[in-house]
Image (cartoon, rainbow, N blue to C red; front, top):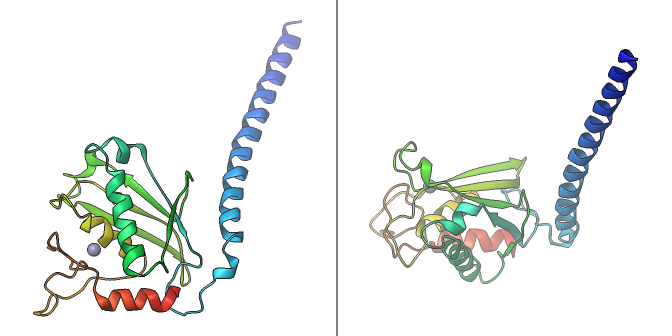
Length: 201
Ligand SMILES: [Zn+2]
């Protein structure tokens, strides 16, 4: 009788594991469906270019909880930064906030990393398949000095469009793509704007 009891316990344990696996995979499947939906809705907007590029618009984005708690509200800075990129490109680049686990751009606020990252305010982590950009991340470790303009976030998001750093010259003293120091009035250069509009128009 004792062995029989063990068998029943083993059977129950297997059932629990089986149900757990079903729940685990059904969660994965539903996330995949969300992504497929985003892709299907934008098939008509494929861009014909050999440059590295996103293959759809709008780009989806989301942020982690800490972005909402931090510094009063960091989410306003993110929204303002994305709006500025949309504005200067005259609406050819657009963004949509969706509660996805893996949006095109995930903003991850993490103040605890500020010192271990050597006082870096933010960094971009870009992924791509061939020349097509894949879901990427912007990490934000500090708020920076500019109170009114989210220059750092604009800078990092532009990296996710393949925009690299700009050399400082006499003519472009406020280019937002300088590697180190750019001031609060830093702007997105005409060269960058033309490049983006050329791809996503
Ligand atoms: Zn940079």
